[in-house]
View 1: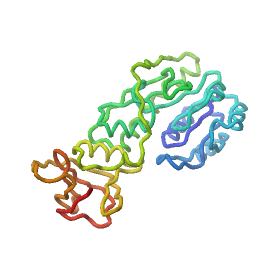
View 2: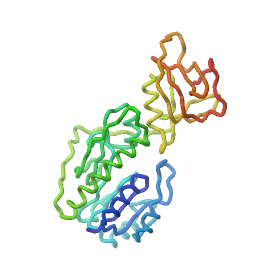
View 3: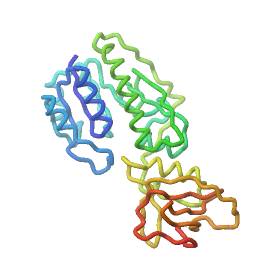
View 4: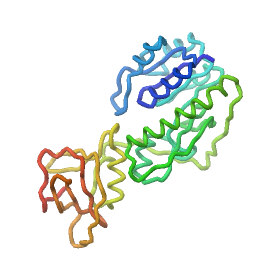
Length: 294
């Protein structure tokens, strides 16, 4: 079974390396040379070339020249993992077995953009790892393999990202032989149960101390590395925050945004219903107790 592979981020590399380790016949890899918006961008060229796999740099995956290159590869199936451009009909219909996509959520729930960040920011208890046959919709094709992934209170974007991909690697090992034998499951999604998450923007990373401590904690861990980081506004600028902890505070007569403590243990700030300690941050000069972060 000849496989063409499309990807651009860390999860793409993980999946490609797994296919190679399983001795899958990867006939070619297509990936961009850089990304202006994927903070977890990963160059797949070294992986492909070290395995002797033909590689093609792409900007617009649907460009006729890329479709022509793919067609010459003669793939039986295409894997598209960690690639944000919508794959169009010319590629979707190119391989006899179709295109396998990947989405780190429990489809049909939580289709769309930034699923790991949204799951953490919203305080969800579970997410998922789903491989599906791509169609012209967004994350709406028939499901090939799906696993539930628990979200722990102490998870960050990094730990959840890694655990989802550990699950995905296991799934690939399970379903690849089924694909090779042509005997694999295919389950339609219940579209009535679907929702779509929008793309997160810069303002979605702003900490507002009128939020509860749990909401701020979730926001900070949702945007921890490999993502862009949450931020506060302080003295006319923005300061990145990479780690936070919830702190008990029973004093109801203190305004949100007021610094309660500041030192090596962190910057403790009053918020709605409690306080939050900013543990790992990029303050050039620490705010002092009594200052305001607004």
